[in-house]
Amino acid sequence: SPSPNSEASGCCRAMHRSKSVMLVLIVLSWCSLVAQARICPGKLYVPGYGNVSFTNARQNTPSMAAREVELQNDRLVPRMWGRTYFGNACAEGRFDHRQYAAFKLLGRTLKYSVNLRSQGCGCNVALYLVSMRQNPAVGGCCDYYCDANSVCGVNCAEIDIQEANIYAWRSTLHVAYDGGGAGDGFGGGRSAFSADRYGPGAACIDTNAPFQVACSFPVDTEGNLTSMDVALSQNGCSVSVSAKSPDKPQ
Image 1 (cartoon, rainbow, N blue to C red):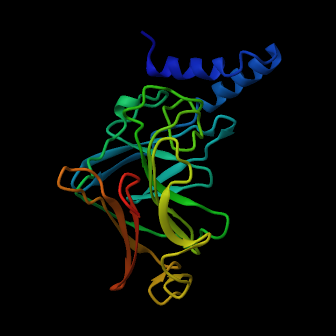
Image 2 (image 1 turned 180 degrees about the vertical axis):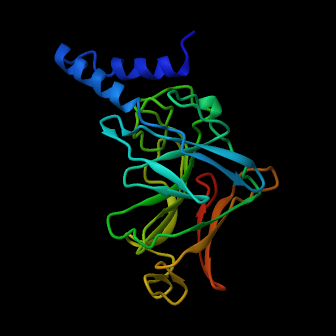
């Protein structure tokens, strides 16, 4: 059977079979150049899980190359249009959905720190969960990526813990074919908190400095997700936002 790498390469060729021979040659030459880029920036230890190997995407969309995400002194540093995946392993030159990490977060809390200081209007620094490990379709980005908006041609459930910049924050739950989702936050018509509580120089979460995020996934008596509860904190002050599960009353 074909390796994950040969399957991914084949998908790129199949996408352009209906185009002219000249275009196919150009695409294959571009794929060869992209294939030289490194996709394994390094590892981090995640308490409660263990070592995580990151795998950088080569394509942000089927028609747009992704930028690099770097690991610097135990910090992930994404470039504009960069995307990286949490994995149990990473191998240069190939993508394998079986190597992606699957965090078990039901009834648990995920905590991390984020620094948005240089991310202004038009920027979206996102941390989200999608079922790539369970997805056998390689997709248009050739790395098994999937989400609720079918960015790479494959739909799956999506949990947006963070979509943010220094002026805005959104947390959203999506089922597989629900691009809009259910969620809340600040900015873009949402007002779970206000500009005096979140933003540059704000009294609570000053986005010119790092702050902490705690995302909880409470469950009902049958173990089903009831909501996603996100708390942002800094120097003893906090704001929160909650997104109800699509199967639960809003």
